Length: 114
Length: 115
Image (cartoon, rainbow over all chains, first blue to last red):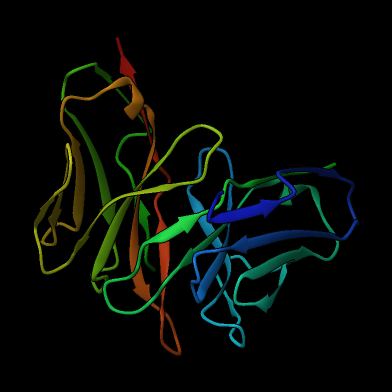
């Protein structure tokens, strides 16, 4: 079984709809991240959480919100989706601490906003 | 501001040759770098990392070189195989306000291995 899972894997929605992307991990990591990837671009950080009570904005948080429901779950919401939020979204986790910086990524969610 | 970028968007190599993928960064305070590989339809996978107090680190068929003077790092893949075809990203760790770190990714280089 995959250590980091994302649901749904693909989603098509309309402008103005509320969308939630879910991420779950079985690695026991404290740190979780949401990124978006656009064609020809690298990954850009949306939000990150270093533990259940910690939420931090990344470089492109506008139009998004997150919820860290438990250590293993980190969800990303688009309150009112717009077409330029069409992208590939990745969740990642890391253990944190000294020498433990490697991030493990989920398979991605492809979101299309019409 | 900080930025991480790659010199070439696409690199084509013959199977069996060595590949060199380059990356420039601008945040001189960054103390840790990672190379990721992303195959089509999948999330990024960790390849190798290097700390700023090192100038070279070797893994299995891969070597990362860091030149802090010119803020440049490279990923060398020996005896490139078809399975190495993917997009490669460099990423740097930077400190964030209030403690902790975040990862800033470059735009990626597409490596194509020709048979």
